[in-house]
Amino acid sequence: MSAHTPAPWAVDGTLHSGDLDVISADGRIAMIDDSRATGWNEPTIKANARLIAAAPDLLAALQIVAGIWSRDQTANIDPESPLAKVRAAIAKATGEAA
Image (cartoon, rainbow, N blue to C red; front, side, top):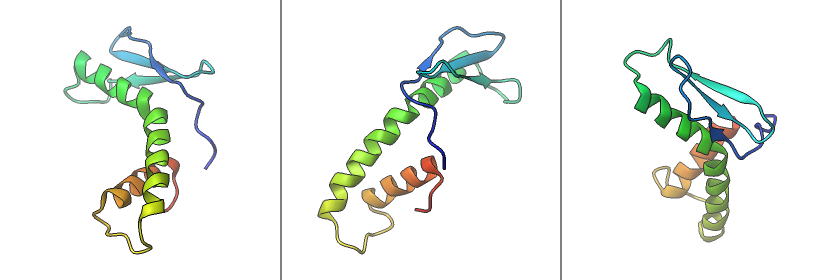
């Protein structure tokens, strides 16, 4: 997988005809478009945009946590353990196998 657009990401904050922009550090824009969503309102659109903008920070934090926990875990990790869930979330974000 290629590297994601560099962090930090920020929410524009201004709703444009039901759309909200998430802007990356290098000026790229991702638009949260509610035109195909059912039942989205302004608070939902803004909450989705905040979550998307936080994604790079969340990924970096999970990678740190996984590194710390991995040092203390044995090779056989319970698939329901917090470490397994952290690794699965990292894999989902990076497009790699869990």
